[in-house]
Image (cartoon, rainbow, N blue to C red; front, side):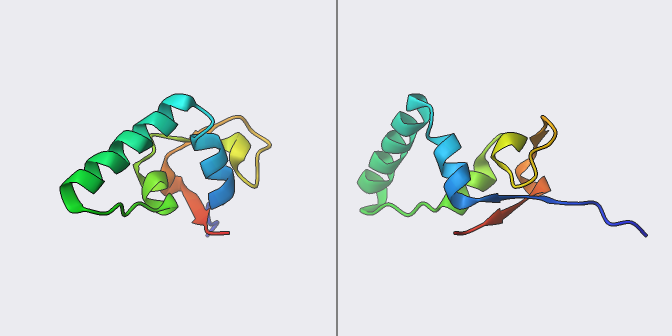
Amino acid sequence: MKTKFKNKVTASSFLGWYFSESDEVKALGQRALEMMLREGFVNLSARQLFDECGYIPSFICESNEVDEEYEPSEVEFIND
């Protein structure tokens, strides 16, 4: 039986791409402020942002020969 290859992305590559748009930086700031007001602290991880992301572009992944978009569940997230 042939196993399907699962692409990989590092936390630093993901975060660099995710926050390359100023809108995402602003959205994170708003989310952090709301959490702070509601709970008194902020608790967000790179993995949480990854899991909530709508898609992962192949160009930030380790194997980026093809131009594809992946669901987060189709990519292995690597903390670095």
